[in-house]
Amino acid sequence: MAPVNTTTASGSRRASMVPKTIPFDITATAEPSTTALEQTPPPKADSKSTQIGKPQPPPAPTKEEKISGAELKKKKQAEKQAKRAASRVAPPPQQNGTNSKQEAGKPQNAKAVAQKGQALPTPGSGKHGKQLGPKGADQSQLPIRGTTSHSHELTKPPEEDKHVELLSHLYEDPGQGKRGSITTAGKDIHPRILALGLQLSHYVICGSSARCVAMLLAFKSVIASYTTPPGTALSLHLGQTYFSPQIKFLKTCRPFSISMSNAMRLLKRAISKTHINTPDNRATTELCMWIDNFIRERLTVADQVIATSAASQIVGGDVVLTYAKSSIVEQTMIKAYDDLAASGKTFRVIVVDSRPLFEGKNLKRALASHGIEVQYYLTTGLTSAMRSATKVFLGAHAMMFDGALYSRVGTAQVAMSAYDAGVPVIVCCEGIKFTDEVPADSIARNEIAPPEELVVREAGDELGAWRGVKGLHLLNLMYDLTPAEYIKMVITEYGSVPPSAVPAVHRLIHDA
Image (cartoon, rainbow, N blue to C red; front, side):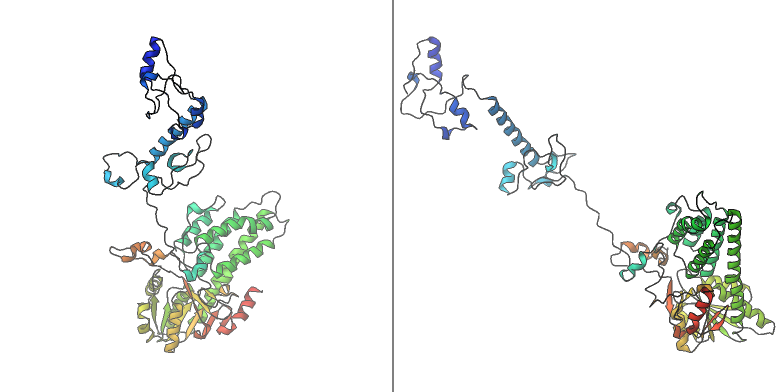
């Protein structure tokens, strides 16, 4: 195309500044859009300032060059997105004199990120690579690769499970390995039940018989203050609906003993037999009287009968060995001492004890205050103590249906040691403690006390921080099972029987 000559003065000045037009190559342009270049006409130039055949640089933009609004908008958006991508890749600014060496090796721009093979944040993503919706709201919490995380918080490792895996089934029961508190009590818990639960959880009341009596007296107060809601019957509401939260709270404080479970079952049976038309005052009075009679016949009088029968087995000069503390064994020793003192005879008692409750200390004080000669041993000296013993008297937490003895942990060790030494083992047990359960061992049924009771709170004790020692587990079992072959006699309020006769006594007591 031939150049266009201009004749005006202004045209001459413009031609001296603008080069002559040359053939235009679209593929060599640096403009982002080819459509705009095709639509823009080439600028005019003066022939005097142009040399034909000589390549010239791209023409400078003039006032006549124009870009459509849509193309201009796309160009601005692309520049804005590029700036955002570069700002996300760049490290955060230094604060409070932070050492710049900490940011060494981190990509500083998009080019460096691309060289490392990392993906750039996609357009439309928010802070830390979070996807943004149409209004900029976070749509995902997952950061994309290539972004720098500003959170330096260390995640706390999960705490080790300190439960013994072999006894994992025992930890599932309420009250196992923990103690109830006021904060766990519901609004429906009676104040007397709340006080009893705290006493049981802190071992203020120990012993199967003592716990059973305390439970019955607490429920006597509950019954005395009970009022039947309108539209219901006392025989239906009291034993089921009203008693349920009370019993549940007591079990969270400490699991029920066999005697407590048997007594509660018999109490509920007596409530269910109450006539539906009986007035509340009369019904509650009769139930309170039933509780008093039950305590007197099944526990108080039964203990007296058993103590009298067991005391007759002790003769002058005997050395009686016992383990821990049993209220009925204590009554037996005192009864035998009083009977022998009348004829000028006496005997000696050996008390074997163990951690963590040291119940034998209370028995030792009670017998010594009555004038009985007492020797105190720990289980570490059991073999030495058994050499001088002539009889072994043991209390019972429960008598199983197969004649096995379920009692304080360590009882089986004492019974087996006596069996090896040829010393007879005599068990004193009330009928309310008989059960139809037949556990194979002390693992199937047991009670787990808080393991912290095994830790001695003294300076320098290595077990003080045992929960932080990996692989260390503390097990604090409450009971063990003594097989029937190590027991010679079981003394009950119904007489003295061998362990093989326990099923007959159980049917006599609970089927009456």
